[in-house]
Image 1 (cartoon, rainbow, N blue to C red):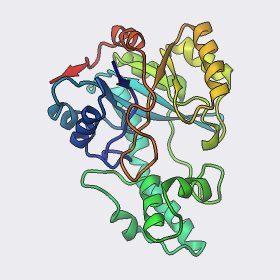
Image 2 (cartoon, one colour; image 1 turned 90 degrees about the vertical axis):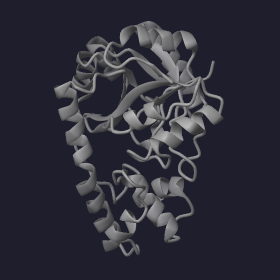
Image 3 (cartoon, rainbow, N blue to C red; image 1 turned 45 degrees about the horizontal axis):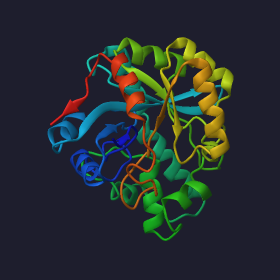
Image 4 (cartoon, helix red, strand yellow; image 1 turned 60 degrees about the vertical axis):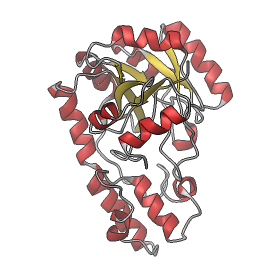
Length: 282
């Protein structure tokens, strides 16, 4: 059984529509897929309505968090979309994306890069919300950088001169809100050091104490030596170990559907804890 628990659609920064995402997941041979767009549940209904036979859908989100100036992402699976507290916090982070993107574009333009807000908007798929990946795609289209990865490495990384901060949810509060919404919280790519600073084990221990359910260990951005350390920490803290692609679509990041997967027993452990939005099948 192939299970990929971290993917994005055009409702955040992916290139596939939710319907295309589930279709591509089935074509890739996946048995279970999670849709986890950033700070939104907007793609859930379309994905569920387009499910091919045989594909299971875990509905979730990826919540933008930060602690002590360090950014981290929390995957919230199986949450109740009607939970007001969680919806309010995600909305704050989601609504901050447009002014943040405008500020980044202004900084790039002031530094002499031939980018405008209008050109960035041309990169958006219908229903998508603008973000840094669309700025990266604009830079690619302009010939400033060769691809999206290069844009993030050279110009859009978190420690660079064009970085603009935005609203983050406190991670302990995010874990508690996901739990209150009947969901299951898993820390995404905890050792992705090439994205910027990562949190230490003390923070992960605090999150575990607040109700964290798992660690996304098998992810391309976690180096091999870090994966072994994370497996040991997960065992010590009684956390579920997951794996996923963090797929964003064709022509986007190089991540491929199913390149890292979650063990069926781990999925079962997550499903047993979730009460907000059950697994969906066609």
